[in-house]
Length: 81
Length: 143
Image 1 (cartoon, helix red, strand yellow):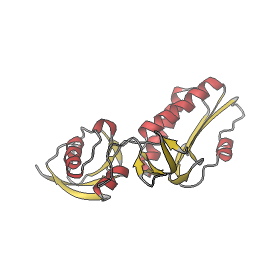
Image 2 (cartoon, chains in turn green, orange; image 1 turned 45 degrees about the vertical axis):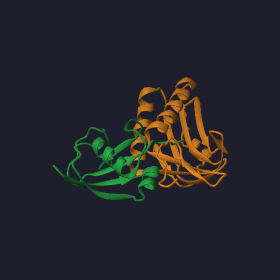
Image 3 (spheres, one colour; image 1 turned 90 degrees about the vertical axis):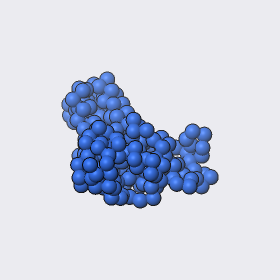
Image 4 (spheres, one colour; image 1 turned 60 degrees about the vertical axis):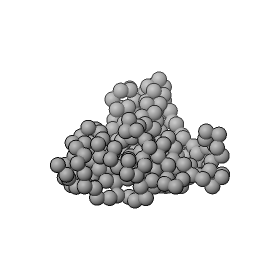
């Protein structure tokens, strides 16, 4: 099933993709599958084990199933402090 | 507020005053400063970026965990975003407690968890003119 979601990028991902966000039509079922697809498209080199994802402004598990209209936020490895 | 993201200069003296309680016999604070080198490269400035809402929500969770896990009275953490210069305070953690042991432990817990859980990113500006996102394998296109 193809659904449409919004992908939003932060920090290194935003610079690499050269955009803040984009609308994506995808067959990905989970956040992890969508990351794999977008990582190939944009050249993101970080494994999901070191990244985080938020769905509709809440931190989420990478295995969370996607729903049409979701806003999926991709966070590269954090480096506060 | 127990965890705050701010673009203003951090005021350690004022923040410490907010931890004062007549029952507290110990206060431990930690300051993270911008240093002029990282991994052998000369650093001229840092730029911090955060997802404000999620950072403050996750940060508040960490502070709540510290209050739950350790016998402490008050806990506060503040992290700055935007462009910072060498010597600036990037992050401040303060804890007050009846006794020093739990105060040290809680302070350590909050800064350690903040560094790995809160969506904050750090871009280094090097003396060479190049820039780099810390801990990140993804580089800017063409870079």
